[in-house]
Amino acid sequence: MVLTPESGPLESQIHRAIRERVLAGQLAAGDRLPSSRALARALGVARSTIVLAYDRLRAEGFLDARAGSATRVASLPAPPLHGHTAPPPSPVPGTPDIVPDALRPGLPDLASFPHAAWARCLGARARAGRLIDLGYGGRAAGAPELRAAILSHVRATRGVVATPDQVVIVPSIRVAVEAIARIALSAAADPVAWVEEPGYIPIHAILKAAGARLVPLPCDSEGMDVTHAPGPPPRLICVTPSHQYPTGADMSLRRRLAVLAHAHASGTVVLEDDYDSEFQYDTRPVAALQGIDRTGSVAYLGTFSKILAPGLRVAYAVLPPRLVAPVTDFLSGRGIAVPIHLQLALADFITDGHLRAHIRRMNTLYADRMAGALAALHRHCDTVLIPGPGTGGLQLAARFTDPTRDDRSIARRLWSQGLGVRPLSDYHLGPTQPGLLLGIASATPEAMDRAARVIRACL
Image 1: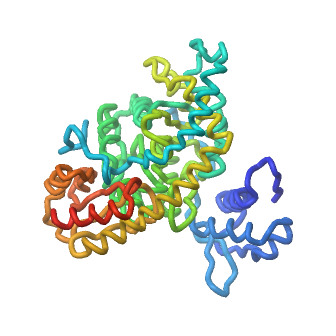
Image 2 (image 1 turned 90 degrees about the horizontal axis):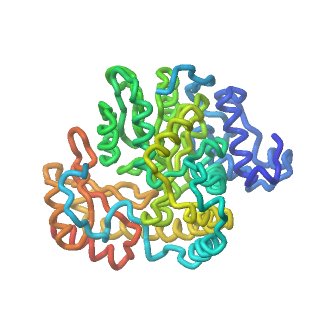
Image 3 (image 1 turned 180 degrees about the vertical axis):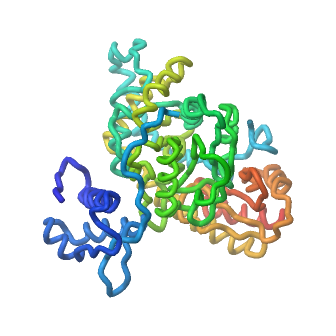
C-alpha cells in the first residue's frame, strides 16, 4: 500500500486500498488484518488514521471487529468483476398549490446560505468572463472546471470512482433521470423499472412518462431488497442507498452487492440518487454504491439543492462510459444547460474549500435540529407518533401509532396551520403505512416545540 500526498486524505487512501482488496478477493472472508498500531507503524502514519479507516470499513460492512478480537474481513457475496457486453439499454396526490415552508421536507436552511463566499465567486466570474465561455462552445456536458471540481469532491467524500469526462452537469436530478430512463428503456420489450417502496413519487412520474412499468420493491432497515424480486429482469433499478427517501435507512453492503449482481446479470442501469447523504449525525456517511461498481452499471446522481439551495438549479450525473454520449446528445438536442457563469462560480466555490466548510458547518447545525425534533416529538407526541431514528438527512419520518388514521387529511389540516409536513401515504405505490414526513432543516428548538404541540392537537 503506497500513500501519496496528491491522492487525498490518508484515511481515505487506506480505506480505499483495503476496500479494493476485499472486492477483488485479495482479502478473503475471515482474513485477519494487522492491528491499527502495527499498520500505522508500517505505513508511517498516526494510529488514529488507521482507526478511522477501520471504523469506516466496519460501518460499511467490509470488516468485522469484536471487543478483544482481531479485525477480520466480513463474509460477503462476491460482486461481478467483469464488464457487461450487452448494448446500453405529476404532482403528488393531495398537494395544495402552496405548501408552507415550515417543516417542509427536502428544503435546506436557506437562512444559512453562504452569501458572502458565493457572491465573491459569482462576482469574480461575472467580471472576468472569458470570450470562449460566452459563446455556444459545444459544452453540452458542462464546464470542464466544474466537472473536475465535482469529481474531486465526490471522490474524496463519497468514494466515487470515475474520470472527469464521465461527469455531466444538469439543472436538476429530474432531468438526469428522464435522460437516462429514455435511453435505457428505448429498445426494451418490457421496460421494467424497479423502484423503492416507499419511494420518491415525483421520480416515479418521470419514469412512467418515459414508458417504464414500475415494480415497487419493499424497503426496510437495510434498504431495498432485490433478492426475491418478481417478474422479468428490469432495465432500470432506482435506489437511494446511502440515505433512503423517505425512511432514512442505509442500504446494507449485502444488499448493495445484490443490486450490482442483478444489474450485471441483465445489463441493467442502476440510478443511484445520493439524496442528502452528506448529512449524517451519528457516523461518517457510507460510501456511494457507484464506488464498488465494477461493471459500469451505476449512474450516480447528486444535486446542490439540498447542500446549498434549490434556486441554484445545479445537479450532476456521474455516468457509466456507455451512457455519456447518449445523455449528452439528449441534453444538447433539447437545449438543456446550466448558465456558464453559475457553473464556473460553483467550480471556484468548491475548489476554494467553501463547499466543504459549509457542509461541516451545516452538519453540526442539522444534527442539533434533528435532536431537537426528536426530543419535541417524544415530549409531546409520544402516544400518537413513532419517529424514525433521525440519524441523518433533512427530514424525519414518523408513523402513526394508530394505522387507521388518514394521514392525508391530517397533513391538510397541518398545512392550514402553517406546517408543510407531508403524508407518508404519498410515498407508497401499494399499501401504505400512514404517518408524516417532517423537514427539520429550519426547525429551531422553539419552533419545533410549538410544531409538536400543533401536531399533537391535530391527532
